[in-house]
Image 1: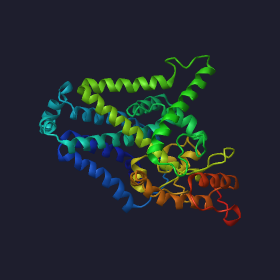
Image 2: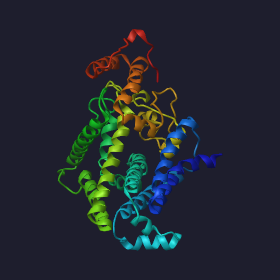
Image 3: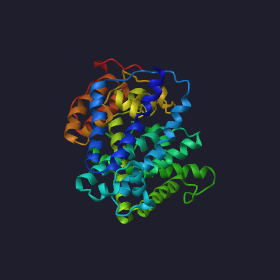
Image 4: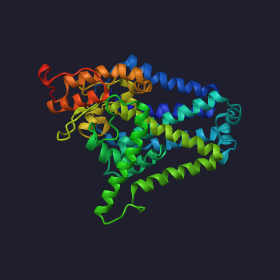
Length: 394
C-alpha cells in the first residue's frame, strides 16, 4: 500500500509521456491525447472523490528526484511540439524516431492540419503549466537546495516566468490575501484583466525585491547578479533554441505556448485566492486560501490542491501537506475550476455565494470590515455582521 503512495505522485510523468507520444504521432492522436488529459482531470476528479490521506514517507528523496525529472520531460515535449510545426528535421529527430518506433512521424507531421496544430498548441501550453510551473512551484520553495532551484528556474523559463521564484516565494507568501499582493484577485475582478494586472505587478514586485536584495550586498540592479535579468535571459535562450529547430515559425510557436503557459499560472492564482481578505497584522492561516482535495488533481499536481496548508507553512514539502477538510473549498478540481474561471458570468454566479460564506464562516472581526469594503467596491450584495455568526477557529 505504501508503494502506491509513492507511485501516485508519478502520475504527472504518465500524463507528460502521453502528451509527448500524442504530439509525435500527430494526426488524430494529438486531439485524442488532449481529450484524455481533460477527461482524466475533470471526470477523474468528479468520480474519484477526495484524497485526505497523509502517509508517512520514509524515503522522501524519491519524491524529490521525480520532481527533477520534470525538466527533461518538459524539454522533450516542447522540443517535439516545436519540431512538429516546423518544416525541417532538426538533428534528424524525426528520422530517428521513425526508425526507432516503426512509424513515419515525418509523414504524419507533413499531413497535419489546423485541428492538429491547435491541439498541439493547447496540449503544449497545458504541459508547460502542469509539468513546468506546478513542479517549479514546489522546487523553488526549496531555497536551501541549489539543484531544486536550478531545475525549478529552468522549468519556469519555459513560460517566461523565472520571476515567480522571487516574487512568489518572497512577495506573494508574505502579502497573500491583501491588497499588496499582485496574485490575489479582488472581488468582482475579471480573470482576463487579472492575467494582465498580476503579470505586470508581479514583474515589478520581483524587480523591487531583487533590487532590495542586491542593495544589501552593495550591488546595483543592473547586474548579472540580478535574478530577474538572468531569468529572462534563460527564456531568451529557449526562444533562440526554438528558432534553431523551426525557424521563425518555431520561435513564434514557442513564444505563444510560453505566454499561454504563463497565463495559465495567473488563472490558477486567480482561483486560489479570489476574493480573500486578510488583516495584514495577522499571520497567514489556512482560511486565507481556497483549497480542494480532489484526488486526481492532488496526485498529478503534487498536492498543490492543499493550498491552505501550503500558505500556512510554505516550507512544508508537498508530500507532508495536510488536506484541511474544514478549509474554504474551490468549486471543484483544478482543471474544472480553471474552465469555470474562463467564463466570468458563471464564475461570479458560483463564487459570490462562496465568498459571502467565507465572510460568514471564516473572517475575523477585522477581516469582516475589509470584506464589507470589498463587497461595496465590487457591487456584491450581502454582508454578515460579526454578531450574527460564530468566529472560525483554526
